[in-house]
Amino acid sequence: MEKLRIYGGKPLKGTVSVCGAKNAAICILPATLLIDGTCKIENLPDIIDVRRYIAVLKELGLNVSQETPNEILIENKGIKTTSCSLDLCPKMRASYYLVGALLGRYNSAEVPLPGGCNFGSRPIDQHIKGFEALGAQVTTTQGLIKASTKKLVGTSIYLDVVSVGATINMILASVLAEGTTIIENAAKEPHIVDLANFLNTMGANIKGAGTDTIKIVGVKSLPGNATYSIIPDQIEAGTFMVAAAATGGDVIIKNCIPKHVDSISAKLVEMGITVEELGDSIHVKCDKRPKKVNIKTMPYPGFPTDMHPQMATLLSIANGMSILTESVWDNRFQYVEELKKFGAQIRIEGRSAIIEGVKSLDGAPVICSDLRAGAAMVIAGLASKGVTKISKIEYVDRGYENIEEKLRNLGAKIERIDED
Ligand code: EPU
Image (cartoon, rainbow, N blue to C red; front, side, top):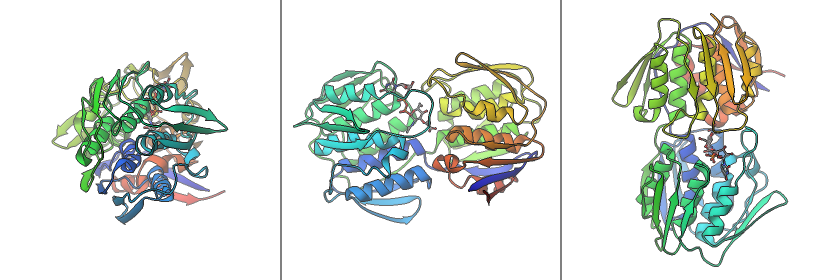
């Protein structure tokens, strides 16, 4: 079993480059099913979730060639099936985008119910409501989502909750539908804008992505034959920002869009940490103990829930008591028991973690409970005195490209070991 071993306590110093956004890649890859011709995608992150998605697309019958792990050429000459493999799909949350894409292009989809990180209940009622509003019949039985229609017809869809996944699925399903679709109360995350930009580059007509009203005028086909480069990963950038701060480091994070991490920068500044924007880079420097701060996670442009566990690690060594409230997921606190093993003082009250900052953390053997919890364990290991061993790092590999190499380049002492 692979683990990460970290000899902590060294400030991170130097420059690190951010890769393409995971959550953009895993909706743009299924979107290639909607295209008639070829498309080239650049800045693809080389992570497990992306490799799994590529395997699913190949299995469905798309021609895929990859000269480097970060570039892919996809050609759709017709697919073999609209039923997706049980082996690959249940491991990924984003498998449900195959429903929107297959239904949108082929009027039929059969996809295993999604897997992914466990944050309590993860309903898909808004996805189903949207597909039905567009004219599909949808059932979820025996672990499968089955959707079919004679044709999809554009309509107005009001999402009862701001859902990233439902917004993306509605875009995928309606791009080739007859007439106009309006999505109200849409999510505004940068990867939604990226998906819309990708589809527009391939021939779609989508306006308003990034606002809470998105208008999609159905087109007959997407000719493709274009190249698209995925945006930098907002959460990877944020993770390095927090790692720099937690280790008392001095790091330049290159190839990011500072605007996308505004909410993270604002909280770090409130904690007394230096954050400077330098074009497409961010400089984070921390030379004193950070101050306490209160944070509430919100849909974009609010503070991202996917930065919650990493931020909890930083708050664990801040001066004073911080309150970190989770308002997106029912239960994103599985990391807390692990963080306590480093000596963090945290208690949960309802949807909030009350974090009493301690002066320093001590290395410990810990387990990742999900992707971002894994990132939080890595940051805690880097910031701690002594040795940390992290198990179940396959969660971290789902979403971070070459994490130990990037950290080693910043001076961290971190290695991957094979150990039972
Ligand atoms: N919700 C519903 N009904 C639905 C859909 C969502 O009630 O039909 C609720 C959820 O239970 C949750 C809230 O709406 O309380 C937001 O869920 P959303 O649909 O926005 O989340 P998601 O699309 O399943 C994506 C990311 C997550 C990220 C969330 C929020 C992917 C594959 N996943 O999930 O990313 O936490 O948006 O930003 O894009 C991660 O990268 O670590 C990760 C978990």
